Length: 265
Image 1 (cartoon, rainbow, N blue to C red):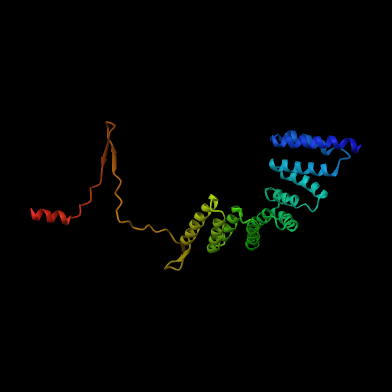
Image 2 (cartoon, helix red, strand yellow):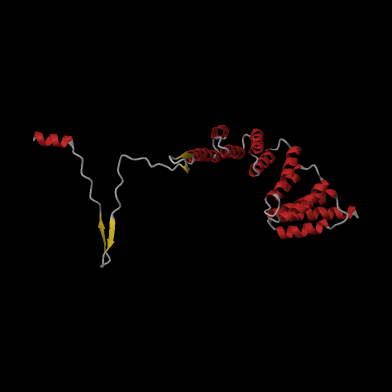
């Protein structure tokens, strides 16, 4: 029985992959649903079918169904880091799930593949969202160490330092990343964003007023050498025309050279 079902199962798996390449998710779901009902089925093909089903449901944002298929896939390969990582993503992105459950799967994925920069960065960002900045920054630092050529991880680390008010460390991370990737436009924007955030934080610092209350510092408009002209007033007339009244021109400053010329004449 197994000998006859395996070729058919392999063909069904390949057909489902072809449907996925063409973004025909419904056809792929139908084929894979029929495939997992075949008994007996080779364990490798059954595992691949469950993973494909999980990916389809993730793409369709059906997170609960995706986790069901991932649970089955993990029974086949409990030490597969990618499956644990995908499970963590399915939990974190699900608004109806407890995101804290994702921490276990992120930790397991990193334990199984500690040199995977993607896993380290995803875990670090998740820890930051959960209010654990120190642990999150350590993971992001590890991701930058593992993949220094990837500007995205440096960007995440720099923004994490900036959110903690450590702008000097954030600038150092951005500067090193720019040195490695001088043509990365994201890192150039990152440098500008850090400068803007630092200036904004300086502006929003609390100041103590004379009454002992706290208030936000407000931006101060610096005077310029040339005074701004008043806006001319406009009055609509009965015939449809508009009467424009410009403000009086400022008195002209004396010109010493002109006075000297007049006196010489």
